Image (cartoon, rainbow, N blue to C red; front, side, top):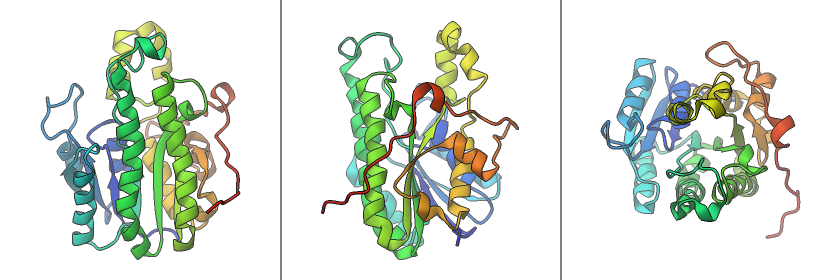
Length: 287
């Protein structure tokens, strides 16, 4: 059966952007959504948004938003998030791994050795943090008897996008979803990776403002930050979601299957034709 309305959810990296949109979209009446992120006060980060503002929006829409300030580069802080969930509820229905570090210089033109070395931080908060969060979430998902883990990703896992640090991080969380699905299968916990398209978020708007000639037209076709949250909600309700486990899915294509349109009424397109097919993995299991 689909996961019930009184879901317990954790969305990482939810101060702004995709994480905020996903958390808000999942925060329907009856749902409790823990939102994590580093930003406590407006102005602490270059872009607007805080975990408290995200939680307030969830509350406004009828859910229960719980903000947890957490630096996902610190394993002890991540562990504390799931200890809090365990103390409050003793279970977890959905984990969305969205936390990522996107240092300045990501979209600069040129080879990786001419970009800041700091771009490798994506491999810490983004790749490694996905593993750590799911590690601490696992006992709660298993105790629940069923569950869903979603790693947010992109076509950068298959094509050249923003250089090797970004690409390696996305390709790795895709593979991590596949391998985690093998371990979780016996416990009825599905794990998928969802490729998002260009997002209409704070970072994209700042990029467009700096280079409207390159990115301006693309913004008109961008997905809202809530779009992926609507897709995750449908996945959670899908009684056959275990059949999707261990695979990489294009969010826009899942939306068509589930009959989902974006909050603006548009039907975001898949970039498969231009950027490549979702990665597929061998069914072999070597223990």
